[in-house]
Length: 184
Length: 221
Ligand SMILES: [Cu+2]
Image 1 (cartoon, helix red, strand yellow):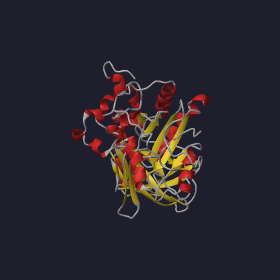
Image 2 (cartoon, chains in turn blue, cyan; image 1 turned 90 degrees about the vertical axis):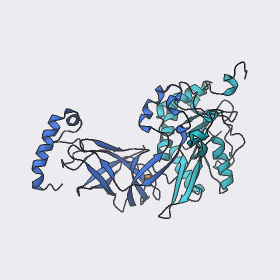
Image 3 (cartoon, chains in turn orange, green; image 1 turned 60 degrees about the vertical axis):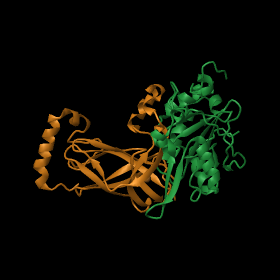
Image 4 (tube, rainbow over the protein chains, first blue to last red; image 1 turned 135 degrees about the horizontal axis):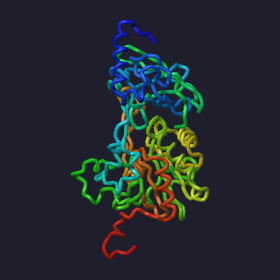
């Protein structure tokens, strides 16, 4: 939103870098991130969504953060009080090792990668202080990993609604996105 | 009767199993060739354990109806991430079955957090995902512990720094056949289409071939 002028040269340098690094430029055009976010220095927020849940319960929000320029870190989150009492940054840990590879499980012949009992480790979640967004890279908040924990819902979250989620970064920048409520 | 027995028993991993050096190979996993899920060896039996059901009121056991399967999950309702993801994946996978296949699959959800999950909270939560699932809860931790352990799972509930309970649990979904054997389990994150494909094969009578009775040379079932 507010883009101090002294940063303009940096933005130019970042844009040039994006041209020189086609791999980055192809996912995240410097001018117009697909979600319409306006800042080039604040990480872009892609596909934010919130899980359907009932009043009084908890929910979680998921999204992907992409830094087209320098890295940053997500340090706090909030939702309006008419949505929920509190929002926190969380990480789910445990479970199967190498969860990123789960999509390929069909091809795991006889579960070769699962000697021992890795398949059934206990899972739990903890609050985290920050979620790093690497320079020129991205980080996904997704089921079974990082998530925005939304505690003590003030109302039902139903499919088709949107929830404003405000993200604040270590750089001081902050952005509010409308997260779509999905059955997930 | 209970079409889908999804027991929300989130605690399946035995603690001992997380220490590979202490775990003889016989307690490993694997052998579920071509299946997305895995099978423990030896195959576990859960026909001796039960957790009181709250909806419907008289269906505490986990043995499937003849020719059917029960999907059992141990979890808790204030879990916003792992549990709803798994229940959603189950709902989507069951929707891929034919009506005839679907009618043979029951789901049971067992809470590992009975202090916060009252019967009303539990059934409301489970019903939102799977209206025909059976919900189970008990205030007797010995009963819950025995059930979770029989499935090969684990759980813990302890007070966190902020006073709120911190719950850990095994995130697997277990498949029980009509003999009370855990014939397959899906780790958290197994995609819905893979679950559906496994279910179809199990319903068609296929089984992972890891059972010692069938792999022992000269052995006959
Ligand atoms: Cu959380």
